[in-house]
Image 1 (cartoon, rainbow, N blue to C red):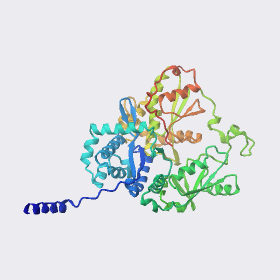
Image 2 (cartoon, rainbow, N blue to C red):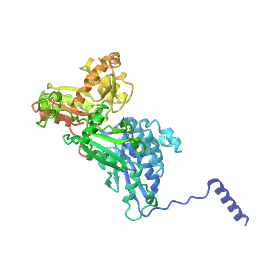
Image 3 (tube, helix red, strand yellow):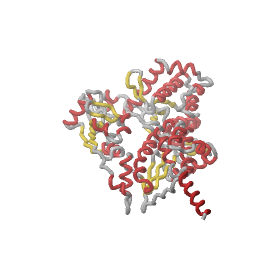
Image 4 (cartoon, rainbow, N blue to C red):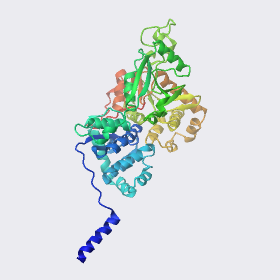
Length: 522
């Protein structure tokens, strides 16, 4: 009796200190499989990671969710697109997945909130979600972390997931919206037999009115594609397409042109968009226009100017196509200049740096030829001496430094650029100004009026040609091409210059099964 009483007392003490055993959450009768393949420091990858959280919180274990990461194999090594810091972040994520399989996404969500700070934000996030940071760090810094991250990269490669994000829902490519409500609705629509109770109370997507002002003469103005892209952010979007040639369209164009907005297409919202879920994802790409909000969509078409290849006098001045001064500088009107290559890049674009690095092999292949290769940059001058580039002010500063290196050290400038590309986002550029390249010369040039003028003059070329994607190639002054690998670049050059000796040089392609480097920043 005393022994029995003692056992009961021990059990009571155990309950006081440990609590009653928690009931295991019942497994749902049906699950849907959602898988992400992302680059942890890619803004679009971080966007979907943050976007899916409300859906996973709502539907719980009815969703079989998994995240993997995208990396590239270079020889025996694997490295993600955004370099060593992204590799560290990926290792932290896969180790957390191994150590905390039920809750690892708590840490991934936290780090994605400030994805540009990955991996520096790890310890802060680990503390916030109450994970053992030292335990995760031991894994991520060791052989296990390397093994796990390579497995993740290989799995993404096997799924042919090269773009961030690549999303699969029940094994099919996902093309739906990327907000919390859009993911929730898409997941609920995927259940075939037993939907979770939460699916019965999904609110309707807010209606969003979108006006697209376009011109049927503009081949690149694609209102359907633009609407589909915006539906990923605003599933309730309702679009109206207005043609510039219509009186209503002309009146709307004149109203916006008077405010300095002159290039089509226009994507126009009213002010109510600022209160809609998802606005935070586009707010850095919008600009006010009176009682309207314009979304910057990379518009390039001026409906008031001559179209240079339609054999019509569009402006009524008696001059057709390339005879009109509007067409000066346009690619279609440029004269052929044999054996010339122009590369247009953003210095901090991962694809741009890969193309610049590939030039080392290209230059070696064509070393017996007179091949003129020029580097140009992509940015906009918002006001005299003030510039905007896709990757921010650090990219503007590096673009100018590279132009200064090209001007003052033309025979050695690529050595500086190739050195910088090893850690292009680092502010420490001076260690790459070595040998014949002098840091004081680059600094004086890049921080003074000389650098501003070099950049102003240089970016005019891309803007006149309507080039906004990095990398873009112009061969022989008038033939547009794309490509990242040395083999693709050689192919583009030789297509229009077949007699060059370098066309007979063998440039190896990546082995079968390994991803070909492709892509652009725009």
